[in-house]
Image (cartoon, rainbow, N blue to C red; front, side, top):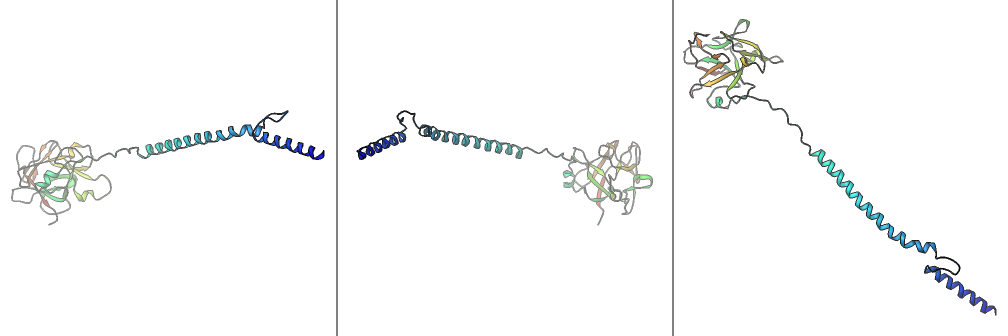
Length: 230
């Protein structure tokens, strides 16, 4: 009799365990909550992973794009310095951008542009001195063959230096350099291919008679450069 009871209990227990494992309702109860939620938990995991995988590359791409824009932003162009083109003068043998004597050509005498007392500038120089050493620098203008005459001896100190300026009368004069002062800009007009030139100032062509700049239309206009150190 006991054996029959024990066998019946064992059979009932095995049936209950099998029902729990398959999620079937146990007699007098509901399906196991653990067994019912497992599929939902399993399917939710891939969805979360998919969302994260989609979001991260998007942020990375946005960050890369922002970095690229910052790296390729063009820098403002620096202001270019305007200077006259003196290449044609150089090809004709006119010594520009060098220390020179400015001489009256074909007169058979040494008559060089020179700095005198009180800044007076005329063709009275006869020797190589600090006062007769000139320098034809490219003028700060766009036109060709324009120069400023800067005597090196008067431009050794710091600052803007000194330039020869044209005047309405005669002679010329030495004054502090100013980039926008038209009186300090001279045009060298080639006279043939011999290295001679005319010196044109704001008030007209420079003419020289017996070592003096004139205003009456008389005198020579042909000038030449002689390299100072020979």
